[in-house]
Image (cartoon, rainbow, N blue to C red; front, side, top):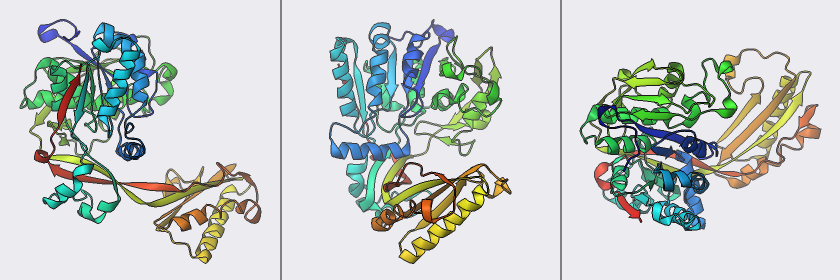
Length: 461
């Protein structure tokens, strides 16, 4: 039973964003459920590189592979879930949704509310165990950027997950789950699913489904649409230390308002929402999801009061017959080191240090695919667009190498510290000590036929 406000055409379902990525503000989930009425709490944890990190964790420990911060977030909102009927939807399951669900069950048992917490588990997005089978049956999983078949890097693949849509989440809600845990669902599905479920939108109700996707896109990055990371008038965003995370107030006709709790900082305005809309948008006419294609050129925004933006007019059309697959693979090794040079002639000293280091690496015959140098404080952000640099008070030389030969990368890490005494003068900081060799995880985007991805939903009573 929903705790959504009122009934009929004026009925409002409130979906609150509590996390925009794994590592977001730990206080946000609790603040969202305690700050005012909400029906659903949406927590988005996953990014492309996150899946490979989680897959490595699972390989070391079969009980890992999920976003462990989610357990703490759930503990902070457990009273709202158990006693007030707030429902939680999260993709915190990563590559191991069952283990994540088991952790939440244990949490509920410790707090004596196990009978009030029904966990829905959505699986089926993880294609890693099926890659060889899929390739053998003609699914090349070609790289969307280069067209190369996945077979070229198959032995180095670390994770492969299809982006699933709202359908299995809706199924879990219909089965009575008040906590739904998924693996690699789309970020937007976490918001669209509860709206679709509550209002009973049909599978071919393209405009309403597109509205749900746009709502999800606006709040998927947390406070990024309510004043955080906001470019327009950023100097005057009020009380960012107390920033309010966004809430979708959805209606059955597909219109909705973006709002936040009263007495919180930040700002929700047409400019702040617009900035988020163009974030990771791609073709504005074709924002493709598993459920629907949303046309962002049809979105209408209007200020509907202080910290309230009304969104309406959204059009959608049928989705494609493909699902996007996020694949991560091992692509060699890297190391990055830094040195800070002081005035006078800080940039000239850093540039000389770069030339000296590169000459020494060349004489050693080390094997690198790429060497990259940046001069922080002078040109690292804007490169040539920065123009001539003034006589800066300090410049940080940052130099990195990458390659498949780990021994070469390891030797590079030993060549930076000597510059403190045998290179240009005025080094003021050997930041972080000797660099560490890190494994490079590369991204391989691909498409696969929807027919080969079968999701499964289980509700743990």
